[in-house]
Image (cartoon, rainbow, N blue to C red; front, top):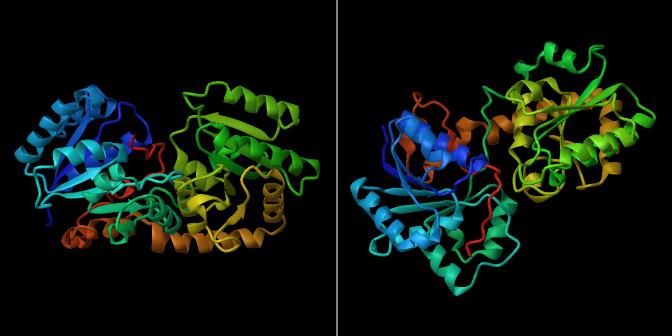
Length: 399
């Protein structure tokens, strides 16, 4: 079996999507026989969890005040672990990596970076040119994302590649549909269930869906329930109360359900008739392919990389961000055309199987550094490493 010594770098002190990906990556690489060492922030949740699982981790300070000491430790790990590949989970960490590799002029260590967001500023000054000069491969999520990087980052085009987020189709699939779950939201079992899965945040569009629901309720073609799944963003307390006040103002108490945090997302999605992704913008939005794989009709905002995932009126429906009127018309159309819902679901399932299934993306990821034997091995279970390019909240600014 193909194997290389890999150093994963993730110095975030937090615990969220990015850190969870780093944790899962280390776990899966270890489980599949790879030699994976993680460089993590001291006393961070990531470091603590890896140590609990006896997964190799070295802790360093995430502060720039300790840059020289961090470089020393980084170089020590490179040498002692005979590292061949570095996975940079956060582009802010390129400075530390670049400085630590200065004495390795032969490029024997391959550096792979992951971009998670669109850039809105140019990074083509001398400093950033120097940083990206050492990157061997930079992974984007979609065609539009790659074009955005070409326009804003000083890196050769042949060093860019596209590897999308993936979805585990064994976990997310129509067979997870639950009559019990559906009845818990609608005891009459007559309502169309319209869900939005994501943290409660102004940028995630819950208010847009609620306002569209108010338009639907004026002359409903059939009973419906709006299921809002997720918790408040920690840094923005109060949004839950704002949304509940909006529901009350629009007299939608009988139509809207707030579930809070749920761990049964795959079952929830499969049990919904329609999933709405109403974010102002998403570089990718993994919830899109999860909904498609689960067998729900996807209605998503026409923004960012979403347009590289959803083909309007073929694999889902698109609407303009924050446009409750257009969202209302999309939902009304789906109420009027149940057969179209079936067509969209089937087409979406086919696209997921070809482009976004974890096994498919896995082969593409390992192929980026010649891991052909690993990619084709029937013994390899789906690995979380293919989800490295998750749609997580992280900045690409390096200053």
